[in-house]
Length: 504
Image (cartoon, rainbow, N blue to C red; front, side):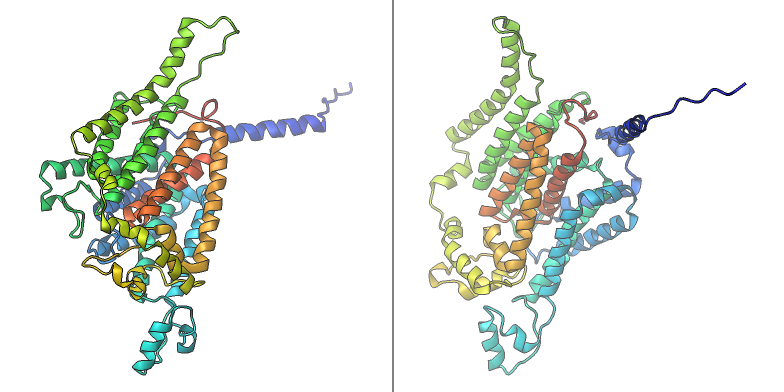
């Protein structure tokens, strides 16, 4: 008896099955970004390295000065963490591909810095733009030794050593993988909470000297784990933004009391910023408050639409409940600012309305900075060389008992110290970051709010100061920006497809 022939499968059917199976595999590989699953899915060596770097920057990474003793501790630790994270590889191989562009840009900066300290022949370095004063000194003493491109090689060598800190942060996050996105955001909040707690202790102790971590610091102000009150306040503003993002995730499972704990930290950080006296902190805190209010509003589920003419009172109450939390945040902030103003305790506002010659100096030197950029273009002065090089161009009316160790405008100082190579690198970074923000837009307005507000805080603070020159802020900045990139690459919109986010 002849056998029964099996039904023939069409090529279209085979193609459909292949696509269906691929889709199932992708869904099965979707990463759960919850805290419990994130921590359990990360290898213990990476958690040890993560804790090591976190503790190191918290204790030793709050000062931007090159001559602080803490640098001798944190820089070797950072290079050790970076080396171990790179050697272990493993869990973060896929994330290395996701973060390849920031990693390549950081390596490019490392190469630029190395080139700045390589000795050049006498005839070559004396022909570089702006080296005339050094060439005259060399001629007068009869010296024809080789010198590097950097005007102050020792400072550039220190900058080269300090690059291990952001490199460790980036390699560590790549090792943690996609699960590390929320973990590093929580680490920023943890550091800000520790900063606020120490600042409160400094206030309670009457600003006793024992309460400060650095010998050169803003004594008499609550700086917390930082040496500079501006850096402390701006870091608090960034943490306020992250808190607003973490507590408004739509698909999340919060531990009991976690929201109360996070909002309490939010309020404590904001109060410390008000007492801190930093004008940049007050301005960036305003950005964080507005963004947090917007996150609270957009984080609430929208009310189902009803046919025209059938809107009930319950629908109106639901709409009110949606916008009420954001209004409460802004009302609380305005009320606290008004209270501090009436009590004459808002130092930052007093510094805005009162003339301060030293603070005004940062604006008076802008024309000099622009002239210096033109003088040393296209190769720059070398990373870290600003303080000594500025003395060559300092005018008599700027002389005084105090000096500028930084330009107080990190955008201009970057162009001055790195020249055209640094400018190209900065444009590449901004282009990459803009692309990530566009990807975040497709995930939802809350992600876009996080990215734009965070960039605004860092960019604005860097225009008035130099927060990213501190090791702690370098780690937090790398983690924040790279977390945006990882979140932007996560599949689907959080409102309908993303896994639960567990908030602790």
